[in-house]
Structures are given as structure tokens and as C-alpha cells.
Picture (tube, rainbow, N blue to C red):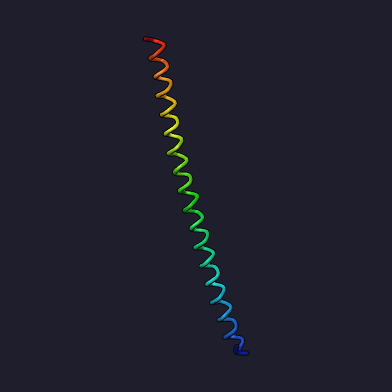
Length: 65
């Protein structure tokens, strides 16, 4: 390793930028996973609400008939 302060500073800056980019990729991946979980949550909620509505309609149909 060189004793030149300019080279050391440039190396530290390059290493720091690389670390920040790696962290950004990790955060982006985690955010994408959370968004996917939220989409699945919405889909499941809609499915179970529709299922409950069908069950209630079926019960109402049986009672009315």
C-alpha cells in the first residue's frame, strides 16, 4: 500500500462507495420483498372477503328458500 495520502484517500473513497452500493442493493432487495408480501396480503384479503361474501350469500339463500 502506498504512503501517499491522496492515494489512500482515493482508495478509502472507492471502498466506501462500493460498500454504500452494496448496502443499497440489499435495501432495494428487502424493499422489493416487502412490496411482494404486501401484494400477496392484499390478494389474500380480497380472496377471503369474497369467500366470506359467498358463504353469507349461500347461508342467506338456504334460509330464504
